[in-house]
Length: 161
Image 1 (spheres, one colour):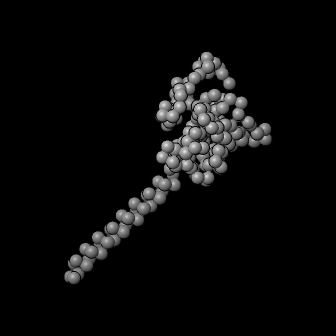
Image 2 (tube, one colour):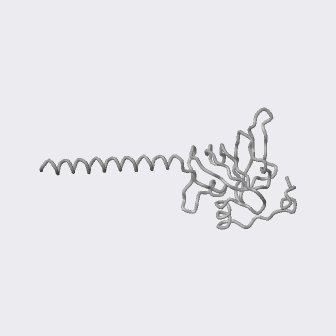
Image 3 (spheres, one colour):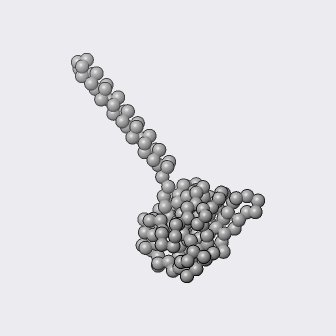
């Protein structure tokens, strides 16, 4: 093999290794930042394709805050509450200040880590804007597998707790 071909081959191999390493690192970084969305029913029973999250996995969960389930720690900012769609309930533990629009009977999306099969330690809680708005993932999931939500007149007027 002449020196010119050796140089080209070395350059092509180096370029291939560099591109492969870059793609591998990008995929690794994307995998670390990916949060999958679940409804409470999907979290407990698994998604239709059979996948269930593992303990320690980062995820997002969306649903309605169950009335009477909000428990606040008097010595800290920790709050625990239950989230449900029309199936099982999942406990969310959050240490921080909840959004102003957070209240029982309203839709939320919590992002955090799965602690056990039905408990999530959230690091972020988002509340929906009004009675008509619902995060797209929640709306789509509820359309597929659940009956439509029924709001009371108090909830429609924003005075219900």
